[in-house]
Image 1: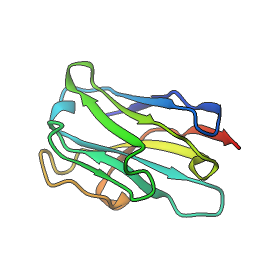
Image 2 (image 1 turned 45 degrees about the vertical axis):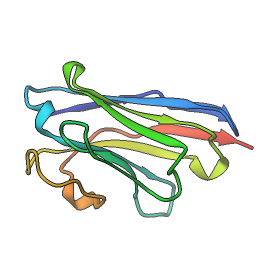
Image 3 (image 1 turned 90 degrees about the vertical axis):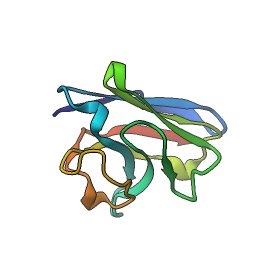
Length: 126
């Protein structure tokens, strides 16, 4: 499985942005997927995750109510819609897939995910 993330960019505080992540391979519909973010000198932090069939989601407290994760199994793609962005949301965003536990429980831990895309930079100017 390989992941291709896109959608990052420079926006103003209060703006919205949508990140996309497309996966190769045939088993995408059985994978839990998620988004993490990282800023220089800091640990990668959990943002959001959605389970394999899209029926369960998890969000970090810092983005709850502003971000929305979704998954389109027909397109092998998942998304992160980000609204009311602020400067604290500035980071490299990484999409990730858990392939080792198909149709398993959803996790907020980065160690649970084994396939990572390249980061896409989101910069929010205040």
